[in-house]
Image (spheres, rainbow, N blue to C red):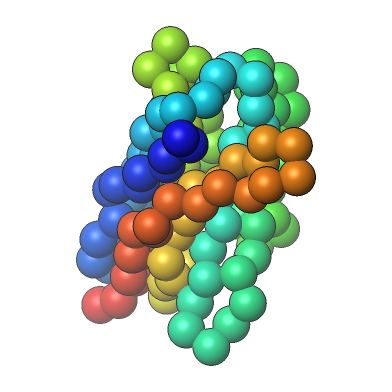
Length: 116
């Protein structure tokens, strides 16, 4: 079955950096778009970044453009999110996502807290 597992979250000071990783299994990873979402307390889940199956199409939310970079390694079934110049408003639970046919799959999430 499809499984997504995120890692790399933690506590970081404003202006700092973190790299999140998502390891996928149970499906043909190279077939699929991969996405990172985040959800802050009391807010709706929002799309942060997406990457096409071969990495040729990448999109970012306006709030993270120029600071975050999404990448993937199809040989390792991983998708990463490099986050630089972190701000307190980036504090959220970050989730890896993929969709097969009409079904969305999610990992359990990894917490990112940006605070001094």
